[in-house]
Length: 285
Image 1: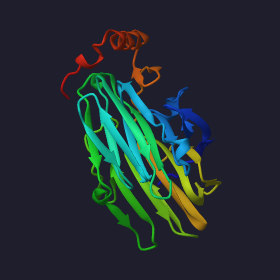
Image 2: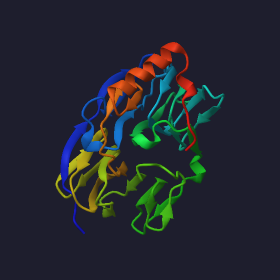
Image 3: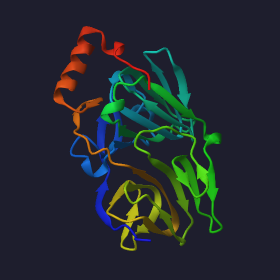
C-alpha cells in the first residue's frame, strides 16, 4: 500500500449564502480541478437561529448533484416537482438536479438552537447533465456503520467500505462518502481508490494524517497519489468526512447554481430561466 501524502491544506472561511445564512465555505467557486468531480463543500454548523433561519429560498440547479448531510436540527425542503420533506439529524439527501430543478432548503434548528450539517456539490458528466431530476433520501437508521475492534466507526453513506456498501447508488462519479470516528490515541488506515481524488474534512477533535500533518475542526486535507490514507487521533479522538471520487476531466462552465460544460450552455440555461421554460428540458436517466 502507498500512503497518500497531503497535497494541500485548507481552512474553511466564513461566507454568507442564500437569504443570509452564515456558513463556512471549505472550497468552491474557483479552480476546483484538484477536487474533480466535486465542486463545493459548505459547513453550515451554527448555534444561533438568527444565523441560519433565513435559509435558501427558491433557486434553480442544473448539471450537478447536491449532497446534504444533517448532524443536528432539520432542513425542510420543497421543489418544483411538488416534492416536500425534511432532512433530520443523521439523514442524507442526495439530489440529482440533472436538466433542471427549482427548490428551496429552509434550516430549522433543534431544541437547543443547533443546526449542524454539510452540503457537498458533485459535478455530472456531459452525458448526464440533462437527465431527469431525482432524489435519494436516506434516513439515519438506514446508513450502515462498520465498527472495528479498536473502536473506529465508519458510517458508509456512499461507496464501499470493507464488505459494506452505502445506500446511495448509481452516482456517476463512483464516489465514496464516509463519516469516520477514530478513538483517542488510536492509529488506523483506510484504503482509497488510486484513480480517485481524495480529501478529508475534520469537524471534531484532532488527528495527524499521513504521519505529518495535524488537522483540527474546520480543516481539510487534499491528498496526492496513493491507495491509502493514515490517521492518528489526538487526545480527544477525531471525526472527519472521507470523500473520494473519480475525476470527470471535462470542461467546467459555472455560474451560481448551474454548472455545464460551455458558456453557451450557461447562457442558454439562464435564458430559459428568464423565459420560463427552464424545467422543460429533461430526459430520463
